Length: 210
Image 1 (cartoon, rainbow, N blue to C red):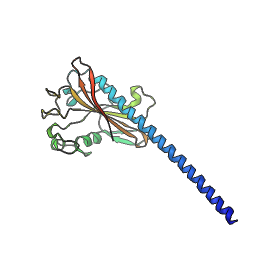
Image 2: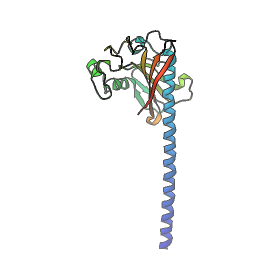
Image 3: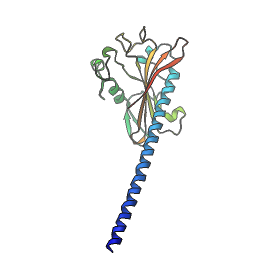
């Protein structure tokens, strides 16, 4: 009897371990799939932004003025509710990128030199250029809310990040695409783009952000 009970316990433990391993692998695969989909969603809103940037005659209107993508959800500020009923705060997201906190940023906050923002008065001042549900870009039935931020090139040394100044930084803009999905899925990709002499848009760099 004792041997039978011990055998039963061992078999039960082995079965439980197999179930846990299968569940873990399924979760890993799902998380990997969600992360990949979010990355593509972030890139999709950046591609839309690139198409609209090509139509802008003055990128000062993009980095500091009234220009917006044709893909723009309401005011580009405040709370948004995702399909799983979780929420994101667009205002807090932009503030966090501009000064490291969700609250409103002062000029001094945005000009402060930090490890992430090392250019002082030329620090990027991110603003929402495009935003909305990815499904509204024809990517139905995508569950992702996407956001595209634009900012002046921080290597431009005119001391005014709200103006696309002259010199080597002229017609150079940073774009940061973000995608937010169910279960806290989040992906970010950043591009540096330039308008070439023939008015085409070229991508100088691309990097995934963590």
